[in-house]
Image 1: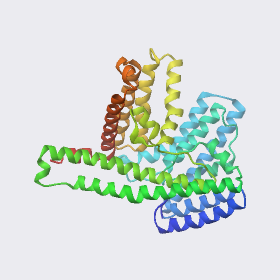
Image 2: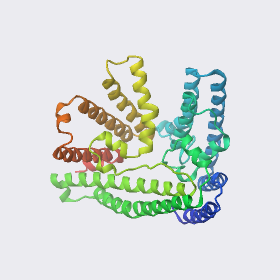
Image 3: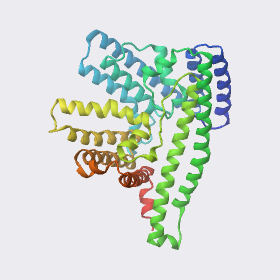
Image 4: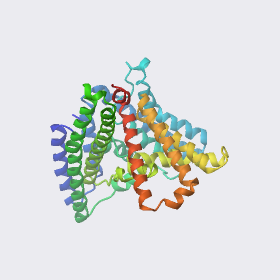
Length: 398
């Protein structure tokens, strides 16, 4: 059994949806119901491999202890930088151990390997950061449990924020208000099904045809170039419809449980530059990195006067930010290069838009917008080609 896949999951989800509707019609709180069904579904999914379930249980206890210790230390001792950094690093430790098992010398290990650890770690890190900032004063154990095990977003996000999540979790909806939310949730699930199980499948088959292409025709440079472009575009569109479809189903299910999970995609292929693309693609992830890594790096570097100006700080910040995002996806070389590729593109975009008189003069003209959109789209698709891990296989198969 896996999330949003297979008859057992969808059967369970239909039952949950009916029970959730009854709960909403009675104008009851979703807190206990949401925690119960989330623990049930997560346990059911992870128990297909008992090691995953054990690792998750250990992970949850470990992170809860870290958060509670830091909450107490923050109240008693105030903002002490070294304690904050120690607790933050401790919260990241299980994910680091999990990622290290991707390296060949440790490939036989399976430390903390369970579905969703990457996304859960972002949630825990956000809580510790906001405890340090003083934005969060207290972390209640039931709310922490609900935030981590919320099954619609457990495996692949979107990445919610604890304060926003808790507001919804502790809210009771009026009947009409909930029915409207429930209807929107159903719409998103239906659209997600179309994206993931129809459109994504079409582009997956096109992508497979490009990878498997062989014979005399492939030796023709123009034909081979067409295969490369076809694979890049079909893979990019497959990635979008597969992931956006999953996100829509997760968001829609969240709505049914009274949680207004944030949107994750907003027509990313309409973007006119790389900065806009990351404002539209995997929004919850890019906003997390922007708020908790990029912005803090830029502010710290300016305060410490590491660089001459903010433009240099921002440019380097983009490269570091996206490089870490690449590593977060995995330690495979294609993920690291993908992250650095986008970091460099974002840095170039930032410098160009701040320094170029040509850009400032023409940025609102229709011809410039069209050209900028076309260039951006192809840069994005080339990035997907890198991300796929099939770059050398597709490009140098002749």
